[in-house]
Length: 335
Picture 1 (spheres, rainbow, N blue to C red):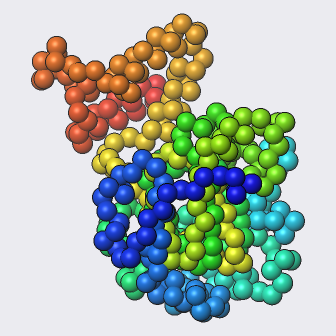
Picture 2: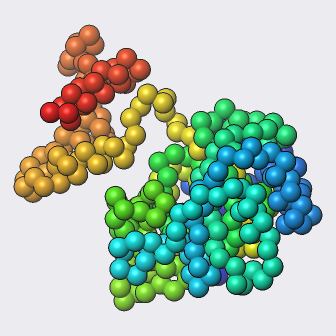
Picture 3: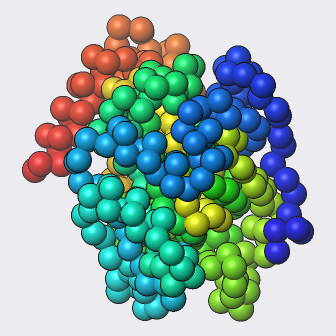
């Protein structure tokens, strides 16, 4: 399947200076070859799985981690069960050392699937980033997470944030789709998800084109990136990405951030409120609201006809006006 897809455009990064501001504001994914190849964590992973695991143990502070655990028969796919009443994995609290022991055990083919995702590096591995396992240009980003496991397949999903994902051990394949492919990816429930974000119901290894015929169109627009240890990839906000960890032992470190101040609201909250307030309206009223959203939000019109002092929320949002808007929303939602 993947041989028929276009490749994500690639640039070679010899050092961190190649991670320019233009890349961090790109509107398409960008492969960053060798971005973190100098990390000690990456160097240990090139030696052996045991060496890589022992290096992580140096920094572990004994705080528990939460792992997804699936039977070997699931072949690393962490997903819903067959009738979408639950999931095909269990969530389990573990000691990180025990997890590492399980990942380096013998007989990989018989091993359960383990997947520790979106875990704060600083919360469980303090000092790891200070040991030259960090990207200086991104060191101040609000969320730096680690992902550890064996072979896994994570359904296509989006993140609200921009993302630089760095492969520190093993190999990963990213299959990416632009936001406009939403309708062709057959997204599952919004409020009942395997890992927090709405996800495609299509099995990328065995796509059912009878049930999901428009997925063929999505594939025509797909981009694929296969990354080795030391490589990174920039994934813009709202790009759908299906992620496969291809090795028996995999580590990924990623940086998430938004291009707006923290006081700006989260768009998914607005979507949820729109479900509550607009979705059930008669068609004519929904169309009227569409015009209002275009006028004030998606293609905001200039408001010179209103004196500057009277524009209120129609003016640029700052921390003070954001606080006022939140107060208004809380007051109305709490009725």
